Length: 227
Image (cartoon, rainbow, N blue to C red; front, side, top):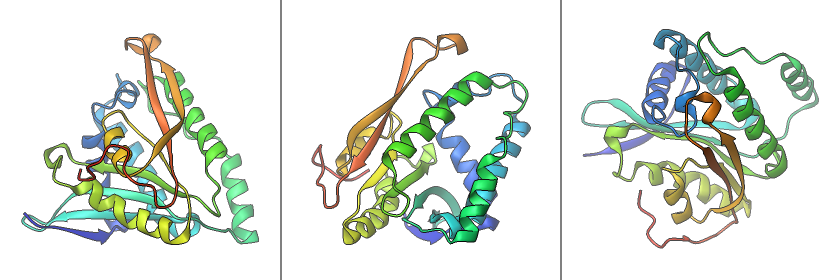
């Protein structure tokens, strides 16, 4: 089976959304976001988010890359790497105006308090650990579950790490428990974490999501690097 990396564009938004939803359907935190929300409403929300991220990539250093299964032409995985960027004065004003606008409310049937807590902790971690002008940030890595353990995660990770190593820069990521071993194998180390009590939202106990930083040229913490 042959796989190819290609840049993703706005025209790929539907495919990117589908892979994301499949990859994170059983996520230890996000699976509690929308317990009573109709699937079309969740799709509309996610599609809008990804369309905006891809469209604004040139401004905020966001580079979407997709993996194509050459046997069937399907998009089966993708990454969103945020490369270091410097805003112009006009872009800074635009960003301030955008950030000052209220965030869209989650669709009806969502655990709004959980979504807010999750996004707030993500934002706090990024403000603490990411320097936009210097830090490489693996924003999203998603592989369709039917394509796990075929090396696609590493395939999407390597270009960003090679660029970071060449620049002598740190690389940041927020890891799910499922993805953590892969990131440790590529040299990331835990520096912080998110902790959320899931009991009010139908879960059991607290969920932890580590925040990781990788130093330039760092070697695997577990040995093997395929995944």
